[in-house]
Figure 1: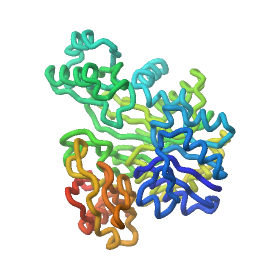
Figure 2 (figure 1 turned 60 degrees about the horizontal axis):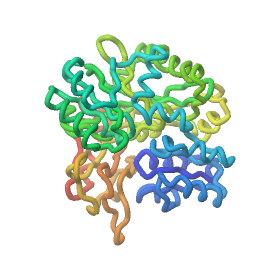
Figure 3 (figure 1 turned 180 degrees about the vertical axis):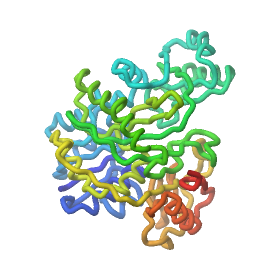
Figure 4 (figure 1 turned 120 degrees about the vertical axis):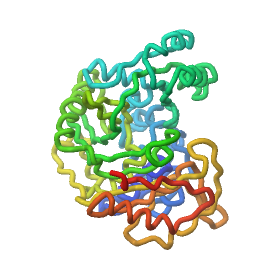
Length: 418
């Protein structure tokens, strides 16, 4: 098969890396890709939000299947566009992608189908939000309704923080039209975890669990990021918890799809907070998580192309999905200053000195004047497997010592502090 993967981050590198070892895959293209992806796929210079450009490439290059990595093209309707032209494409359609594209849409879905989540209220008027914000207590969570590149969720510790956040989102339009509506939620105390699931019209199959660390500094301190590292499986995802989440979250979600006429085929990411009052859904994403994918696909033994084909034909229940018993850790190396302002173009060295069993998934890299350089906030995901999470973490950190670029930052507690 000739496959086009849309996207250019660590998630897409993990997808391309997995596909590159599978017998049914003849050729992989990736748009726009990055320097790491170029090692396993042919790079196509088309942005992931150029839907017509991607469509024309797929039609002109005999692409058998297009796999959508990021959320923006999904929310903008790339699946509907491709299917309308008779092309095979993997990902949920525009209607289903509203589960990620609109916080209000997803919260209403959860409430309607009795899926446990935090209490919330929607606002479109600043004055009313300002008037009622104290009624939620503190801390309080304020979310821009639309997509905001993982930065549209703010935890406010007090009244002043909350008012500043409301002004930034609703008046200053920091996230543009994504902040025209906001969702204000009660703050949930507990342990955050997530689960990725394969979904077709009739079946939802959870993948192996993963733990993502979003705070920029050790010990869950500092600003939220897109993810500073993951390990799989999550230490809190016991068989008992998995059973409960399947019954109270995943099964109810699938039933909700059926009742609402949502023909969801693709990947569902469920962000969860495990509280003293049970599990609560924080968010839905409608694609592989990043950097959870780097740990989960690293352990996946069944061919990804086989799973995708089963989903597209509503035969997911007919296949067995297997994972390695080894545990996986992925630690993100980021640009100095991330998740706020940072510089690009820093030369990266040391990747040719790493142990052979370490895999580096590129998130933000490119080739410039013959050098590998940084090209984003999250730059590299250094990954390894071992019998325990702690052993995998030690392999990762031993190898990170060999890598260098100016301003390089990473957490030193991923997988070590469980």
